[in-house]
Structure formats: C-alpha cells, structure tokens
Length: 189
Image (tube, rainbow, N blue to C red; front, side, top):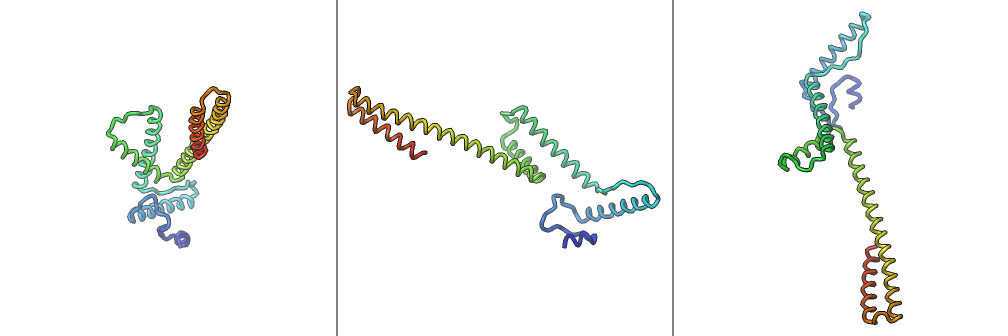
C-alpha cells in the first residue's frame, strides 16, 4: 500500500517504521508545495534550454533540525574526545547533573545511530568475554600449578615420615591439610 501511494504521489505514513523527524501536516504540505514550485522552475529552465541542477526543497524547520543535529553530534564527539584526552577524574558539577547529562547524551546517540550503538555494545561484550576467558585461563593455570605443588608436598610428607624426619601425627595433619586443599581445588576446577 505504501509503495502504491508513493507511486501515485499520495501522502502515506509509514506505520511500521516511525519517522525520526516528527513533521506536522502543515510542514508536510509546505514542503510538497515548495518542491512542486522548484520542479516547475526546473522544468521551465529545461524548456528554455538552460542547465538545471537537481534541487530539493527544505523548509526552515528542516534546515533548523539539520543544523541542531550536526551541532549536537559534533558537540558530543568533541566532549567525548575532550574527556578522553583529559581523563577527567573529578567532575566539576554535582553527580546527579553529570549522570543526567550522560544519560541524555547516550539516549540521543542511541536515537541517531542505532547501528553504531549496536556495534559498540557488541564490541564491549566481545571485549568483556575475551577478558573473562583470559581470567578463567589464568585461574585454571594457577589451579593446575597448585595441584602439582600439592602432589609434591604429599609425596614429600610421606617420604619425611618414612625417613623418620617428622612424627606420624605431624605427617597425618599435613596430609589431611593437603588433601582437603586438593579436594577443594579439584571441586573448584
């Protein structure tokens, strides 16, 4: 239906995908009339043999929207770059204002560039997953190393007992302690 209306030059609202720009009916018709006037002027110039360039009519509100968007986006980028460069540690404003400003900036960024936001989120998740995997590998390596040490300590305790270097009660205490730690490490692994 939307394609048919577009082909016939009828105004049709896309109900499935909401517009990022809220346009009033008055602005819509002003844009339509302005574009029709530009098209008519281009047709007259073509009929006279004068070269024409493609033109697109923009209302004053549309020009203002674009100016505000570009200013806000450049400001957000500049602020992010400035904060990264300065590595600000102590905010000059109350925490609630800083947090509210940060939330507003992120919400605006999410509205303006969903794909970039999605890529950032996925990159952060991948980074966190890689960091977690490295941490788990390091923990596993430490566990394996400690288990090997415990095996050597148990063996040394038996040897010391057999050689008569330590009394049997001390040997049993050491063996119980080492075995409890070994069991705990194996369960954690």
